[in-house]
Length: 376
Image (cartoon, helix red, strand yellow):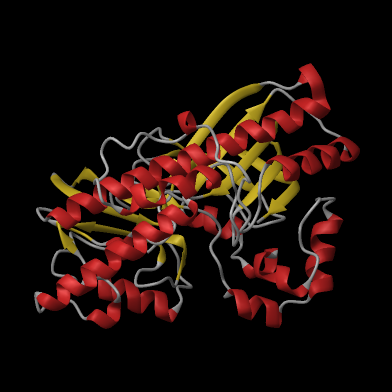
């Protein structure tokens, strides 16, 4: 564990993972760890011979992308105009595009099963690509410690990922019951042996969702850049693009063994690998370089991590205090009403502590302070 204040339920879930007969070595808990569905968010599971849909989660391929721009400053008036332009071009929350987007923007269908979930959801997904979604997804304009203005997006695979995750988890549960599996069904960790057709289909459809989530972020970023150019003109150029996912499973080699690494709210941090660790609304985010720590399965946190559930935050946080925190920093934010408190800074762990706890996992390259935040 890379934290001391782990939630009791998250620790119980980690123990359930550790007791799986196919778990390899140990379970790694990142410093942003908190309770999830079946497996803790901020957890890393290595398995031999099986894949566990719930150890990837429902928002397959969810992740971050960040663009370093040529801009060094942007005043409040222009920032407001840019943010208005973004809201016109990027559907937020449950909203989709009215028209299907260009098919060339979609990942190729060549590897997915003919009668699978992806092909059934494909037409709907063409209207969802380039949309943010809700929950903790965000678009943020930031000022970097390198002197540049950055753009950051957190988003995933929208409804197509949810449908794939639900289908294969349900399928795994049914098969595990038929096989009289030793894995307690109350733990929500049903698995698929990799030699089965069901596992092969899940891996193919999961990878499509990872690719779709990346394509989704790329299209949003193009539209965000258009909003910038409309306001900033020729001053605006992209200097660097970074993309990472934090909900997926893939084959990797660890401790001399080929295993399937499941990262659920965790980021790959191989030696020299560039990554993104966002804070909460109103706190710093980070561009980092991985240190390749073997004990963490070469992983790091995917963000600050929640310290309060959504309903708990809405009940217990003080709206005026949370707004004041953000206003004092001059951030154009999205905390307006009590229902927005689930994404207020007070609902999240201290990002400084999170980063201190993983100093052996990543090196900080650039610190990013928020200027404007758009939430789903």
